[in-house]
Image (cartoon, rainbow, N blue to C red):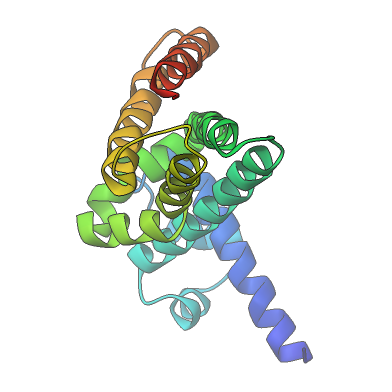
Length: 192
C-alpha cells in the first residue's frame, strides 16, 4: 500500500471511529456533520471523498459493528460441542454484544429508521441473521431442533432484538442477566 493509500485509509478509519463515538453518545439525528469532522480532525472534503453523506458514514459504522458482532457470535458458537449449544451460545453472544448501550443505540434503535427497513434488514441478513439461520439449520440437521429454519430464525431474531431493547430500558445488568437466563430456559424447552 502506498503512502497516499495509507493516508486515505487512516482518514477513513478516523472518520468511522469519530462518527461511531458520536452516534453512540448522541444518536444519529443529534450528531451534526461538523461535530464528526471536528472529532476526526478532517475536512468536509475528506468526508465526502470517502462517503456520499452522513447516512453513508452511518452505514459504515453499522457494518463495522455488525462485523464485530459476527466475530463474537462465531467465537462463542464455535467453542461449543454441538450445533444446538453453538446456536444458544451464539445467541447469548449476540445479546451481550448488542446490549452494550452504544451498540444498542446504533444498530437496534437508530439503524432501522436511518438506513431504512430494506437496507437494515439486508445488512442484518449478511451478518448476524445469516449466522442465525445457519445455526438453526445446523441444530435441525443434528436432530436437536425441529421446524423450518428460516421461520425459527425469524422468531428467535425478533425475540433477541426486542429483548435487547427491553434489557436496555431495564434496571441495568440485572435485566440482561434475566433475559439471558430466560432465553436459555426457552431454548432448553425447544431442544429435542
